[in-house]
Length: 247
Image (cartoon, rainbow, N blue to C red):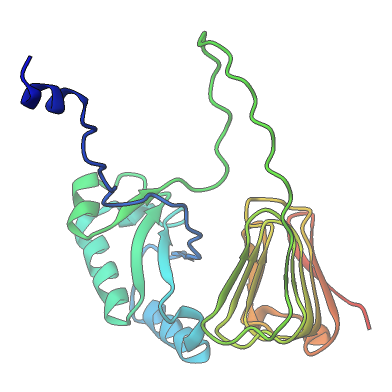
């Protein structure tokens, strides 16, 4: 055996550096439910009024179109016209849900994806070998000891989120558990982001752009007047978002 062959056999191959990484990310998307079979002048007038009232709420936010009450938009021409008009208003439409009858080719042509809406039912059992149950990941609460500025997004993926300070307009708080804000809440706060309906939101002064628990949300114009700029407890009861003034 030659020395050259021996070196080829035993020298380790050069290390390969991965060219990419796959990581999970939170995506805060707005669902625009279409409640009319015709996107006429009245529809766009109401939408334009909403955009003028809360421009920061929609700025840069990905939008999903929900057609649960508007099956007529299965027509390709009506879908193209709607999506075009929304994008001209700088709405970042990227997906649809409850889109019965809309062909996949039409969605692909518009740069849209179909998303599953609501809660999935359990899959039917099969005869596959039983896999060991993974141990739940430990709770990891997060405490922020400074104000949260506009444009910041703070996430507590496995626990509660506490902010000792104010939350500016345009900021976002996301937590698997509860959210506590020891200061004015002017941005968005989304508790129970993995579907925990027992999550709560507490803040010293409520003036938020959006509050949500397990996906059920209220925007600024939907906040109860009695709770505005008051110390408030927000929770779910009977599938409705409740606001309780603490002091």
